Length: 453
Image 1 (cartoon, helix red, strand yellow):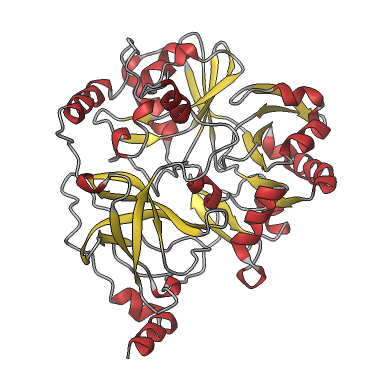
Image 2 (cartoon, rainbow, N blue to C red):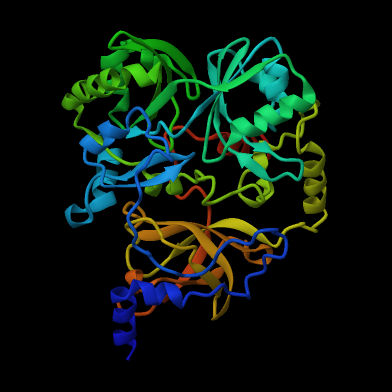
């Protein structure tokens, strides 16, 4: 009977979706809008391509390169697959990332420019870290919070000039927030999206490829450092940043609407000797590095203390910023052993079949003995290097300790070899694997402090 039931789930996705219900046992009383924890499965539908969602300057090129599926990110189409499942899918793309070099269309990272005499003061007011410590032609990974301490966005912030910053966005409408803040505060700045579209060049051969494009000087760019350059005669900004934990860069093309093809084909040509492959963002590797995805791992109701971003709340920033009062109060509550939230993010290893594609749902988590769900998985994937499934997940605060045993409820697609969909899990350290460039959290931890400037 169990086999027949599982086959029915796979063969009849509409009935499977229709049977999904929100579990009441996961405490979300501290959220205004609970996470949707219904296990509705893949719900296969065709994406409508229309003018309601923007096509980036690289969209047609991504399709030419084999993009077969996409999602919507910042109200733009975002490629999420080039190698089809029957040819190995996302795990083949992963091999190119960790052994060679890859190019990603990440134009969805819309660039919001803040420019003017008060640019530094304005940026310092909207981010938690200290903007005055970002020198021109340097960048930082930052967060912006609302007055309740919830994370509105976690962009890479580029300071391209003394009076000019670019927010390279994760997946939320930050331009509206920034404009609204400035209506109330009256800083002397201009705020607007600009026609700049990045691609990411990621993988161990990325430095050699970038040297072919820009010369040996590109090797001197520090982590989160910037450099001006040209590709096919068009101006770009280069940064040593990325979404992987591997060696990598981003190329920000100015006037991207005009020159997208010139950049794309020039990089493809330069990449041939390095075995360059166009792939989708490699979530398998970013999970291993402990890198978060806004909208998937965090949202505007998530506090930085819940999701491994406590280091983004400095203890030594004197200037006021949005959310400061709330975040400092939360820190006091945590120090007193009274967290004002029910769940906290942890890393877990878990069994079952190899997770080799995006999860369709936030899979549920119970205690070691099973029973009613208490938490949920946000970002799972299989790690070939660790030979196990890994994930970022939210569990009750009291279940956060390393070594805590849990149970993950998997969909039938990832059932264990014995057919079980309830598999053992264990809380482990994050990151799961080291990165080429340790991030600010890891560097702060090595110094014995819990925050970064």
